[in-house]
Image (cartoon, rainbow, N blue to C red; front, side, top):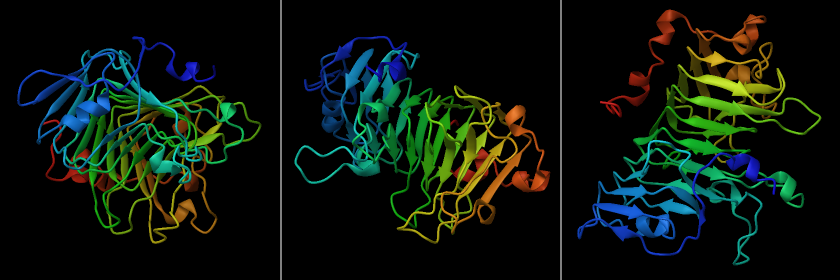
Length: 342
């Protein structure tokens, strides 16, 4: 089965979702989910802010949706190894809904969705193992692992695995500048696998581009920001690394996404102090999604990156920040009064 390659190396057996979780206390401040339990049932049982759900080692095949009322929720794996605890499903944009109401769409395909402000996710894996090769009849091939749109969302030591559109960092409204922070995370995919409108900071994360059995290049892009024009801060990657399972130069670092529902967007991406491997096309690391919105008119920039994929051979193709400009593109300036690691 093709999807096994995406989940290779994970511990724990496959468990069926559906049973109610065990609760550690009468007030349900800490809920434990064990093999045979349902993560969603634990989320549904959250009865106040600041609760914690601890998921024990295993592979939980289910869709999980965290509502806005679960403010301050912490969802974490029991161990510190994110490979031990896996939440995975296999819906895609073009997957028909069981009730016949159409297809799931990109956001609806997500294995994990959260609207909760103050969410913390740590020490586990979120995956979407839907594969194009298994479904040649489906053209909507976006298949999201995590879709997050609450302010002050924090992911730490989380593995996010999928192919197209792995991580959707969104906001609660077109005019909201919701903040998200990712630290020590592993994020892999092929096409636009980190995308969206949020103010999103990635610190010391690993972005991994996948091998693809196609005869065209680019085979994909790491980032596809869709930042609102009024938002001074989009996606920031600092002290990260970009590696690849594909051949050298097969991937682009980014392309701008200007959605049809927000044509005034002006995508923003800054990649700084990051090691970029040879899988990224160093000569022309950016490309367009639509010719009407060229990447040169967007807010793309780099600062002090290293590695073969960061070599500046055609300066006009790699806008660089000055030291003074770089002071405006830090974790602190992007997150404002929120200090997730304080």
